[in-house]
Length: 510
Ligand code: NAD
Image 1 (cartoon, rainbow, N blue to C red):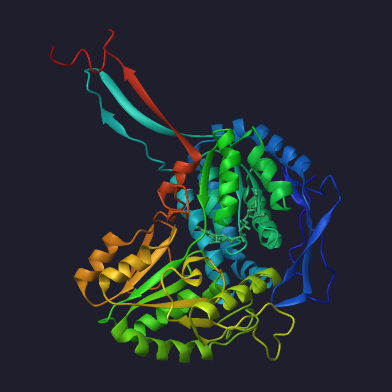
Image 2: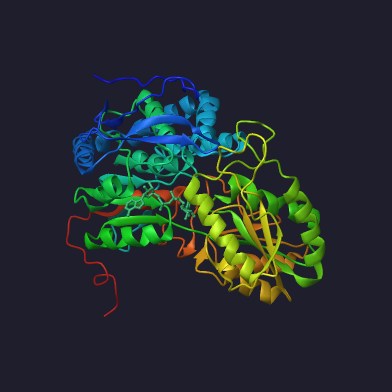
């Protein structure tokens, strides 16, 4: 019997719920009986819930359920599958505020951004719902008479979906919606910091009408749950978003089985500010990109590459605005910078502050944020370094916190070199009023996403999303490109000539 999880979120003083795995349409306990906690990063005394610490045995059952569900789901007409995605999008829209509040409580991003995170999930549900009626292949003329040629997409099988905590509703939707509309079934492992968001999402998906076994949720650690998903011979495709180092480990494991693998990994995104830029506009974009989500977006701007004549003018404005940002619990509408995800994240940022002090000049920030209401959260001051050399560690390595490096450069060519001189390639932006410089940057930046006169964040769901170089392995999420991860192409030739026709031979001279 399917058990419905209570929809109310217990507060700090309320009962702390224990959530379950979702396998074959049922909410079940893990085989091991072990659980783990999820806590509110804004107030670590607040336990969001207890969650099942899944294991290889649970993954095995989830994979079995997904395997059993696959034939019927694959045979369901794609427009019908799309209708269930639409229903999911509608339910998410009805529950948007509840989801956003739960997201802020568990992950910490400010409530306006949490609503945006949920909205991304809704948008992709509707976009991919529509793919149920598109999923275009090609129908092309044959080179031979009385013969037709066409291509169709077909599902691969079971998709293993492994997600990070920083977009805990949007990213699972970016992965699961295309997988499902294409006819695959899913085993979903969310990050251990955000199992509640995943539970709420899967609860709505079950309510929307996904048949038992099409969507399975197994919470737990990367080693106990993630690895068995990657290693399972029955999971045909893996989509992973997370750290580049983990992506490489997963790629090695998946490679042994020649598994389809989509990786979305780290970033070190830059905004270039040319001397003719509208500096006030640039400051807005830089602040939003660097300190929004407390610098924990994969598309966060962590480097500003600025032409020397305007460094001082830009820095003066940036420093004043960064100091004035309101730090606090993201549940307050006025909060601009929420907490980091957990204590290790704070310690990691602190370690980079030490590195930065040795490499460059600290302009503002650099400490844990203190003050009323902040003592039990993982808060850190918005931090700016200047005089950073492009090859400095703080200019090269992903810190994933509110730390911005200002890199002065002589001219446009030096700016492009600096923007590109990292091993990542997700997003980049340029502020300039020179249309020629803007077009050069669109051509020259080695990133999957380029913005002109806007920050490095703000991707829309109907264009491909992903990065070059070590940000990924060439796949894309969102847009119709997302379907490439979850489908096999099949080319079909229909010969109605009634005789043997030989391509490349019968119709060629000699
Ligand atoms: P992470 O790599 O620590 O974890 C991501 C997920 O993988 C989690 O569910 C984790 O439990 C699991 N995992 C970890 N090791 C695993 C293993 N060996 N086998 C299987 N599963 C494993 O990343 P995170 O801290 O959750 O997320 C932050 C990172 O994600 C940053 O590097 C950020 O840039 C990146 N990110 C990239 C994008 C993108 O689209 N490029 C988007 C968001 C986040």
